[in-house]
Image (cartoon, rainbow, N blue to C red; front, side):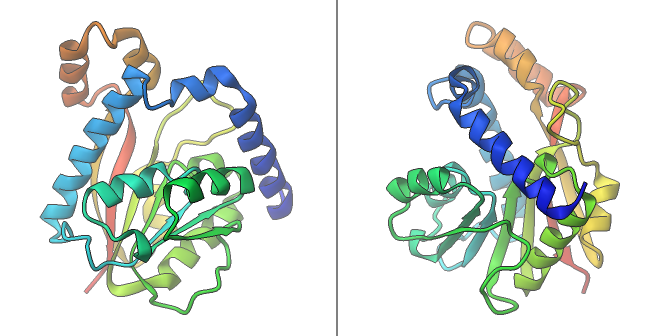
Amino acid sequence: MSDQRDIQRLREEYAARKRDAKKQNLYAEHNPAHQFSIKSRTAALQSLLKTHQLDDLSGKRILEMGCGSGGVLRELCALGADESRLVGVDLLMDSLRSARSRLSHSVLLCADGQSLPFPAASFDLALQFTAFSSILDPGTRQRMAAEMLRLLKPAGALIWYDFWWNPLNKQTKGIGLSEIRTLFPGCVLDSLKITLAPPLARLLLPRFGRPAACLERMRLLNTHYLVILRRKP
């Protein structure tokens, strides 16, 4: 699949998801399974950031590829990030308009993430949360990864959260640790397998919160990797 064909497919797929009320409800803030996954993901992210001495976000300039309506960037604000130092990139103007209502002081760009108008080494943190698994073209993934590396300061960190396995959605491709290493050469990787399989979480929650938490801690049925990558010394 060519670069531009895959970008167009992405635009159409994301637009279709936004029109699908059932899918929108699965990721709504009031959905118990979604609340559960966000809470556990935030705790895991805080732990990794602290391990790497990156937990003070207040002075950091942060870029998100595929920011959607700004949910992840808002989570970072709750962890201490300065809204005025955030940059979000997304393919859909509708998503960016929604993000603007939440992040009025941030820079929000409509772009595919392969070539952005910033000098090299502009950001302390560069992150992507479930954007890469929606990209089927290997060349597009590689160019986006290279752009994230270009924009990262030498002492900065990349934060990755995405599926390694999602057999129910043919519009996505799971990405394992070996491919992440290939996408970001010259980086060392620290990872956690998190997020209980969403269909299972939806079956268990809200009634069976404790069993869901126990299953997630076992990690056998977790479907995402949370990863911090840093350049080798």
